[in-house]
Amino acid sequence: MDQLRNRDSFVNITNDFSGGVRTLRVRAKLKLSELSEAASIPLEQLKKIERGLLELDSKTAVSLGLALGVDPSDVQSAYEMFAPKATPGEGYTTSKRGNLEFTGPRSPVSASDKRWRVLDLFCGAGGLSYGFEQTGSFVTIGGIDLLPDRIATFTANHEHALGIAGDIRETNPQVIGRAAGNIDVIVGGPPCQGFSSIRPFRALTESDQRNSLVEHYVLMLAGLNPRWFVFENVVGLVTHEGGEKLNAILTAFKEMGYSTSWRIINAASFGVPQNRERVVIVGNRVGVDFIWPSPTHYVSYRSMAGRRAELMSSIELEKTVLQPAVTVIDAIGDLPAVASGDEVTAYSSNDKLTDFQKTIRDGSTVLTWHKATKHSEKMMEIIRHSGSSIKDLPAGMVTSGFSSCYSRLDADRPSNTITVNFVHPSSNRCIHPFQDRALTPREGARIQSFPDSFEFSGSTAQVVKQIGNAVPPLLGKIIAQAISDQDPIHIPRTSGQRALSK
Image (cartoon, rainbow, N blue to C red; front, side, top):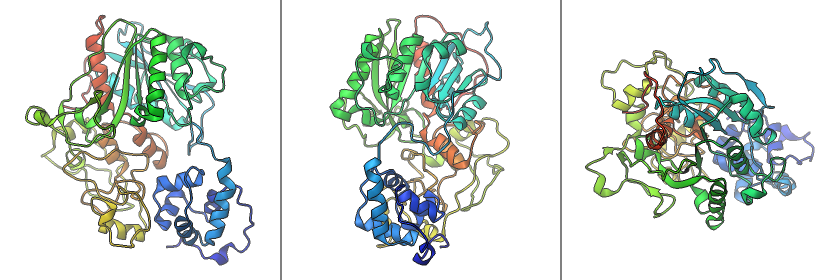
């Protein structure tokens, strides 16, 4: 392929490798995804290598050297010069961050609107708060995220919401409260990378630069004092540092006067066509012992959390009384075929839509974001041979990769967890069940339960990240409905809310 370079093209390159492997890639004028394909290295693995967070072995150095057209020793030298400076950090992004820019609501919420006000922290595309709104009992009045394109998507789909693009650590509850008004519910999933330990709530101060993003979620909660909150995070939080981190977070909430309950939830158990497990903490200061909703769909899967009392999942005995899990083909089977590098903007005429497809189309007449990644010839050959795991590929076709890389989704089961790179087969299991290409952004959005009417803003690469990082709106709706039903004060509902699932 034309991205592969020979060493002669690098004769004038200096030995300044202070930027690590990324320096070599930039000089070769390759994107991350292009180098990933050329070197047959999973995208997530390559990202960690570039950031100095994953050890570079000799075999991988050879693969990178061949793809970059440099000697493997240069790759190793570049890595070793950069690695000592590496830090996990928080808020690592591939998009320009905001500087606390405020975007006003398109239509300020009326004083007569009795729905409860929701603030979405670390909102991303706003999937969690969008789900809250679909109950008819809640209205989103604000959201904050580091990246402007996330806020553009968020405000496009939340008519009454103020959007703030910037670092939450550079503002405070007083500023947010004055801008957004009274807040009844705070929702959000703060990134946990890099936070060493959460200190007791009484020791937290807004100006302390040691605060993690999780601690800023806690500070916002303390300063704005909502009736309810929802905290969402990765399953790894349960076992990290022997569970001490989760216990510290729960203790901080308790010290603020909140009654809390937490569970490990698989979104597929509630009608999302994806096995996506997350830790969810729900808390309130109104004296309610929160009762978690029961699974509505039966799904057979192996939990990342093992067997724990907090795991919410269907059991074999419920197979005949629950709805069957929504599968990949249930979710995307009505979408027209599209080839690698092509785009389709019109729906196929199809009278035999599944219930999920009928609902997820949401009245849309124009198909958006149904554009497939343009794969290289080498990747197309891999895709044509792909099966359920990397082991199905002929020996030697790829030199490295996790078991879930370069593999097809099972049409008759829920998808595996959608990641921020679901359009790149070298990163995860994301090849279409029947077509020779990775998923399109629209297919990924459906698997996350975003309706086709949902508007995404930004480049394709950033929209894919928005989709992959989101909380499925349907899961947000399930949690919101339980809160609405259990609060002792009746929450009025508006009419005409669109359902996300049947």
